[in-house]
Length: 280
Length: 246
Ligand SMILES: Nc1ncnc2c1ncn2[C@@H]1O[C@H](COP(=O)(O)OP(=O)(O)O)[C@@H](O)[C@H]1O
Ligand SMILES: [Mg+2]
Image (cartoon, rainbow over the protein chains, first blue to last red):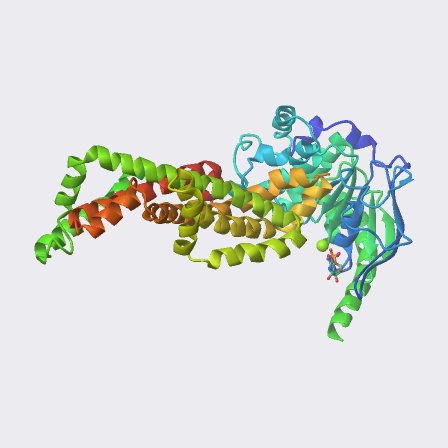
């Protein structure tokens, strides 16, 4: 699935350290759903070109945060989101960031290719042009030969790659990926992680990636944001300076496990809080 | 293959018909032999063909209009909940008027025209289609809607790329049901004084106690119904090809 390391774009070995310019900024973002306090004054700054992972116990508000970043939900009054340094008005993020929800949500009446171009098509790109581009991209996404299949005919991993391709074809600087590999088995997932890093290094986007898997969070990221139990808050913001390209064996390296231990401590504390809240 | 699947049950019915007439010595008053009925149709082929075409035309016009208006009003209702609250109850009440009573008024208004029969077929068709279009659009996964909105989709893109295609299976369920209703509507319309069409043949045969002609008219009605149904099935197979693979 992944190309040999020698074929990889030279970017990959260079650009670990993000350029520093802020791409996406969150200032005091809170959100209530009636009495439920889902997010509590989130502040975060995502640099351009960075791969940031967001991890936290389930129900802590990760998806809610993404819905806000995608423009589908508004933060409570007082909070704001800035894109490229400009505060975005309500609804202003719709159509400006490439959002991949937790489920692949492929349309069963559209072929692989036509699912992949859905966002581009909605944006008004001519179908023919979008299809031609998608056809070229299909190989990168391990979908060569499946362009004209329908989603029902694909495995879970392939469906996920179609959804990812759709997100990449929606040509936006920022990509929000909500647990894209959550439903895959461990082996497929590990392959997909390295594949995603490879793709990311070629297409250079700012990625925010939700996961509940610590290994995944560290393995992929330039930075890990750890969210706490509800009301969701950023408990930790940890830079990951492990060298790239990253090989599968990295997760057994001592540097890796040291970071993991650090994150685990915070996460366990937060998960325990969620657990105890559930017991009460 | 498909034609065969259709022909087999027909052959079975024909065999059962002929067989039971012979086996139980059924009086021709209750059930004449199939070959006599087919013979009567053959002998009077042109008249039967004309009746078939007229009734089919009436039913198709009402059915297509009812289908279009049904889908259209379903779309409008899905976008305007207030309007739906006001108008849908009127639609429902309209459907409680028995088609026979309604048919009499329509024929009074339109006279003995094609429009009158089509209007009755329309009346029976549009309501199930409206309701199913609406239900289909309302059943769309909100996460799917959110996804398209995040792509920057407006109402129009949502409708064409998501809502309508998602509702199609339910719309076709309604259309299959409505195909039979449209035929019933056209026949009822013909009962109010029409001299042509399957309904007119039915009525004439009944009054004159021409049992063979009556059965011939019934077979003709089934043929019109089958034609309508086949029309829907062909379009459905084209549009909903993706469902077969489920
Ligand atoms: N649309 C909504 N209406 C009401 N409550 C919601 C809604 N969306 C999320 N919540 C609540 O907000 C909290 C955070 O949910 P979510 O963001 O989905 O968590 P996560 O993705 O981290 O598992 C949960 O308690 C959830 O029940
Ligand atoms: Mg979630």
